[in-house]
Amino acid sequence: MSKVSKEKAEIKGNINIKSDEVMKKDEIKALPKVKNIIAVASGKGGVGKSTVATNLAIALSKSGAAVGLIDADIYGPSIPKMFNVEGQKPMVSKIDGVDIIEPIEKYGIKILSIGFFINPDDALVWRGPMATNALKQLIRQSNWGELDYLLVDLPPGTSDIHLTLVQEVPVTGAIIVSTPQEVALADAVKGISMFMGDKINVPVLGLVENMSWFTPAELPDNKYYIFGKDGCKKLAEKKNIPLLGQIPIVQSICEDGDAGKPSVLNEDSIVGKAFIEMADQVADQVAKRNATLDPTKKVEINPVLHKVTTKRNN
Image (cartoon, rainbow, N blue to C red; front, side):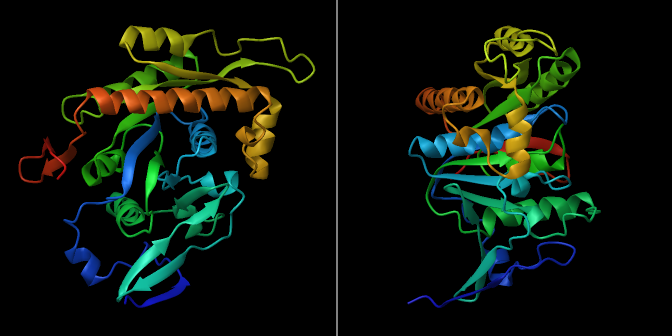
């Protein structure tokens, strides 16, 4: 029978709990009990990507799915605040001498973030390899168990973190979040190109348009298109990818996020309904993707040739 003990996870310049035994098992398939791994990305910051990822995770859970969420925005983690779990520290289970991080659970979602391991007031000054190693440990050295969906909230733009994710696991698909503003859409195009390019080859499940219009609380039927109208809808049509949802701006989204009570918890609100409908579209697109496309291949980097290739997941 396996011996299990628990202690608080700590961090010293990195998540420094990886044992030699785990290092030797790096070739073992990561996340073997996770059915779908979904990257939530954006071309630029400030478009509400983490808000979308948070509410999407809870909405999928409300449909009966088992859901996990990795906050991979290493330098600007916001998921702990949005779930009102700031200050909590994940436990580490020592199973037969191997340290395994236990995700924190809130609103039915299993959550891990670098924010759990650092002082929220401190600036994280890690080099790229340290940040990517932290992500690897959140993926490989954590007790995710059986999940229908594991969402990965990526940093804005394209970076080492994105490449590390597609190297570590076969990503089922990516969701790109943008506002309808032209400057945001220009960066969203880059995100789409990165995932759909021959070297990465991860299907884009669709676009989510955030801040689609402003609706005042006292005038719930009015729509004011502050950042332009239907920008993501037009881009989705141009790129021949689905538009998964349009999320309006209402004051409650900001208030709910700051309070750690995501808007989708109120399913009868305008925003709650929008997130539920978006989650239904995401689930449909995942099912369609899995029925019509081969499993995604992990990306392999040849350090000598600096060449990106793909490797079929065993």
